[in-house]
Length: 89
Image (tube, rainbow, N blue to C red; front, side, top):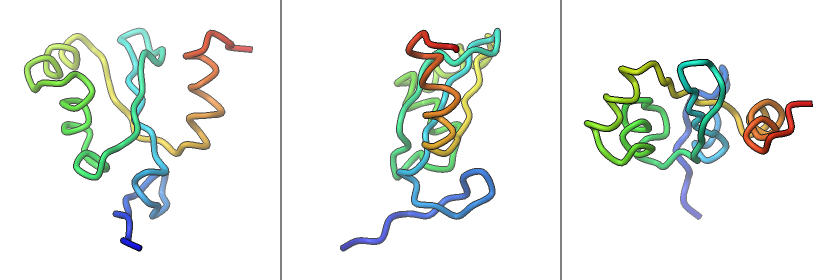
């Protein structure tokens, strides 16, 4: 069994695949998400490039006020997933 890369997620050392990158639009609402890869696990710049598929596109969105945040899967399930599914109750 191979060891999984550990990264800091919300103040805890955890395997990178226990995180979730969340993209927020300029208004502050979540607009997308993706599981971290080993390459982008703890680097928001690399994560943005993976999410938008190119450095130029990532720069364009980030310049427009989009931001990307790493959070735990538990927090993502509790706070973000319901909003993405249209259930903000």
